[in-house]
Amino acid sequence: MLYLTRKIGESIVINDDIKITVVEIRGKSIKLGFTFPPDVSVLREELYERIQAENRAAAQSDGDLLDSLAGARADIPRPDDDDASKG
Image 1 (cartoon, one colour):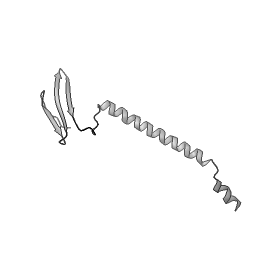
Image 2 (tube, rainbow, N blue to C red):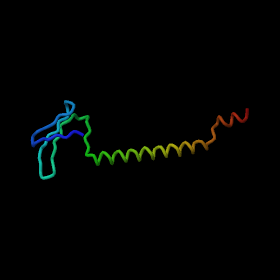
Image 3 (cartoon, rainbow, N blue to C red):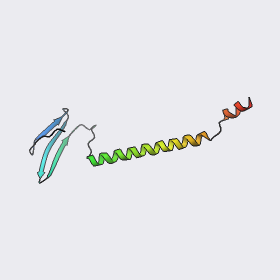
């Protein structure tokens, strides 16, 4: 992790197109301003982690649904199966 010291009004630049500026300092709280391209996503870490957890849960439930559908489909006789038994 990189640690930097900045004062109010000072900035850092990341990859030429993301700029983070210290806007205000109140006690132990710091207000930051961000300038970045519209295609960049910026989230608070707790929101990012919650979204990732919800995505994992959704992927798991989709997988469970696909497994149950595959199992149910295996029980359905296929027309080709009947033709093969007549032959």
